[in-house]
Length: 228
Image (cartoon, rainbow, N blue to C red; front, side):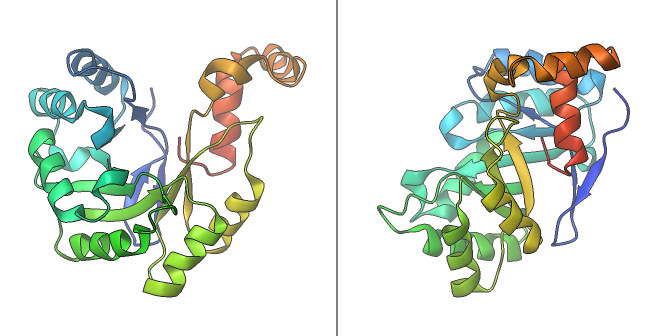
């Protein structure tokens, strides 16, 4: 794997464009996965409190022998913790064996309980204190993003959303680009479903360029400036 391309976030911090997400990996499995990923050049790792594997991620990174300033670690504030972002982050930091995370994301807006603006204000304070380098959100639609900006004056650096060729979420992507919010794709291949999408269009492109369908989809994201 070549040296990963980096994306400059609107707060000035740099993030690798390609990272490893560890959803569904157990605390033991994630150690070997991260060690292998580090061997081939990955430096960005995405976990979350609700994944219940932050302990494994922490063990993997602490035993890998890679300098902290080479790593980019993301974790997330879960819905039930929106009233206690500080305590939730401290719990995550302890499990991750870190003094700070590079990116802290609010996992969902959960408008039904309507705590996301207050949670965002708490995350802004955590960033000011240096416990997180950058702050962003996941799964936010345009009206959620607009409300954060209107009520706090601070736009997220990232909106992490499900994004792939068969679900391009063009309205929210356009809003993010207009406001300098980086778009990060999770399930960038629709958990495998998009490998055969478009009545074989992706497969034909892959054959024409002598690459795999997965490489075609990843290149599509990269050319669009999406973090993966």
